[in-house]
Image (cartoon, rainbow, N blue to C red):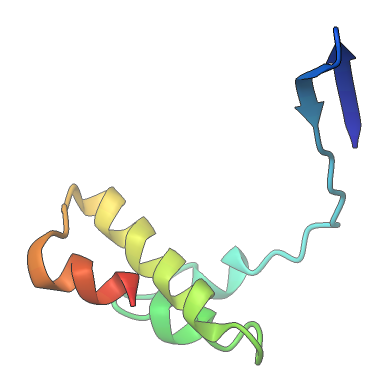
Length: 77
């Protein structure tokens, strides 16, 4: 982490996290668009919902879908 301070105030923070590639996207190649949420949920036993929601949002972005209303509120839970 690099923090630039000027005049007693933080001006800029730069965080670099290195994690080697794990190539999980290779598991998804050639699959139906409905499969990634279930496959990615199994990447981590501690935080499956984070991976599942990321997959859902990626599919929605790729398809140009905007989720709103009750579903968007439920996701915030």
